[in-house]
Each structure stands twice: as structure tokens, then as C-alpha cells.
Amino acid sequence: MKEILNQLYEIEQKSIKNEITLFDRNLKRLFHEIEEQGFFIKNPIGEKFSELRTDIDATLMNDLGPKSKITKVLKPIIYKKEGTEVIIIQRGVAIVE
Image (tube, rainbow, N blue to C red; front, side):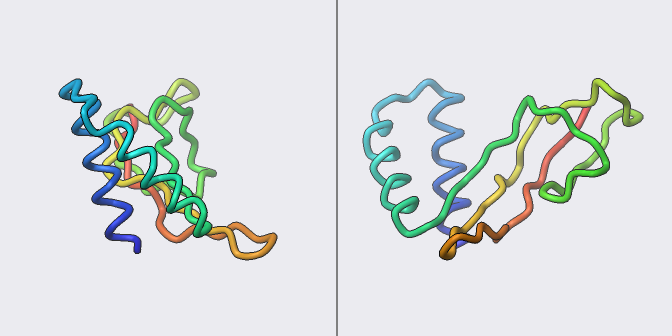
């Protein structure tokens, strides 16, 4: 399931980048079905980054400082809800500047 979610994320990002709206409805329906099965995808782009974050593997482009932000997400964070618990299935892979 993790690989399928990564591929859907890439398709979504490419369609956004190229301003292709033809698949928006289909992608929303797919993501809805995936969420019904307990999976959630998070794109942390633009969020602040600190060394205390455990949900992301980051490549630092500059020295880490208080203004460091996630500028590119190569792989999203994937969660799965099991009962009342939420577990990380995949840590995100990102570039921080």
C-alpha cells in the first residue's frame, strides 16, 4: 500500500505543477477511499523544520536555523489509523532550506 500511496502522491504533485486539473475529481475519490481504510498522507511543504521532528528525514541545504523550512517533499509522510492509535508507516523525505 505504501508504494501505491507514493505513486498517487507523485501523480497529484505532477498534475498540480503542470496545472492539469483533469484528474482532480479522480484523485480526490482515490484519496477518500484510502482514508476510509485508515491511511493518511501528509505533505509538510512550507512547515518549519527542527532536529526534533521525527516524522521526516531531511537533507539540509543550509545551516539549520530558526527560519529553516521544508521547501521540497520527495516522499510524503504516511500514517495509518488503527483503532484509536495513529502510527507512521513512512517518514517523509524532504529538503530543508
